[in-house]
Length: 139
Ligand code: ZN
Image (tube, rainbow, N blue to C red; front, side, top):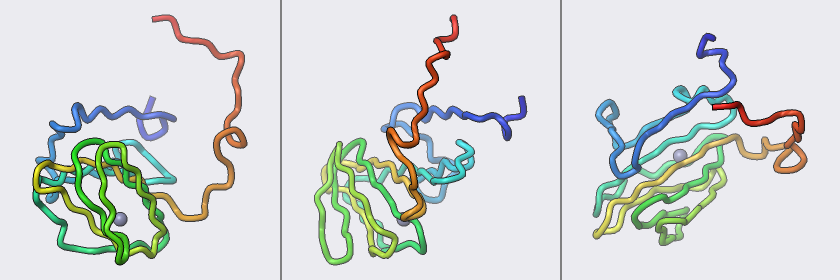
């Protein structure tokens, strides 16, 4: 089957602490194309200990969800500083001016999911369809 038409895709980055960023300018990997996503973007980023991203940005139409998977640091959202650590999730409307930094002691590894704000019409039980005829494929 042609991978462009395959309805699911698998990427394994390995351990978050050992992600290979060799082909990227920043320690950030965008995964939309690898995963053939059409309604969202996802990236993984590792900020070394003590490093602040110098740029602030906002978005035209995408909201973002930052999910910290390892380490700690801070996100600035407009004029507010938010402490973040493993397990933190921070969502932001497109217009929020934001930047992110790692603490002095530890690198910060996070996922960022982007999707068009106000685009979700159905979710959880209203979008899920039970398929009772399906069963596990035999290994
Ligand atoms: Zn962004």
